[in-house]
Image 1: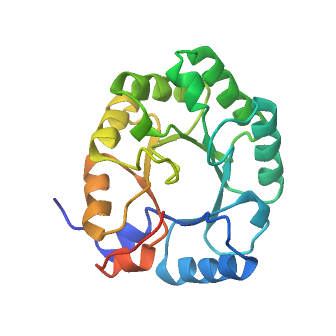
Image 2: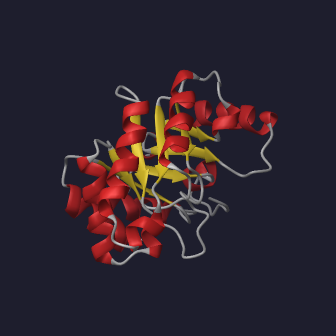
Image 3: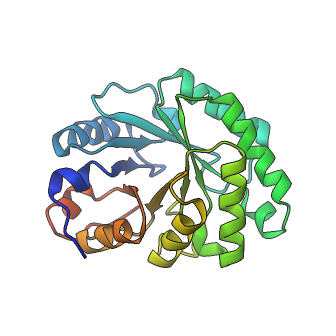
Length: 221
């Protein structure tokens, strides 16, 4: 596995703080750390917007359960875009997907896409650890048909777990080079981060960015 230099690896990271107990001061510290490390973006809760930073700003939508009405997700996405979010990571309704209602899943993703059109970048969190391979493929297909830009493995909050190399490979194989693939959830070491990139991820959601870039072990998201 090819080792990425720090600048290249940092350029793939969404430096993330989504803990419910996070304060505005915590977010400010996250922004300054992201700028110092050279990460691609920060990812913060929508209630923390707007923020001022030199990196891209991502937020979440329907987080973390995905069990929100499509209109609520769409309104949340529109509000975040109006407050300066460059990217929105929405959680799809995993229950609908597991029930086989792919049309409803596609409809809710499209509702968010309509509410936050390009150039806002839309990532769809599929919670891959809770899905079968067939369901992962179906989720990726719904996201692509609905106009999403990325598919993303996990919220990092589901008890089933976070990203896996297997899921990332399957997602990449399914979407080809048409969509991006983001690995998130449980990536706490440089080795794990580079393994996800080797499996096909072109974005990483992590909270322990400094530890990863310095070759240590982090904790959290």
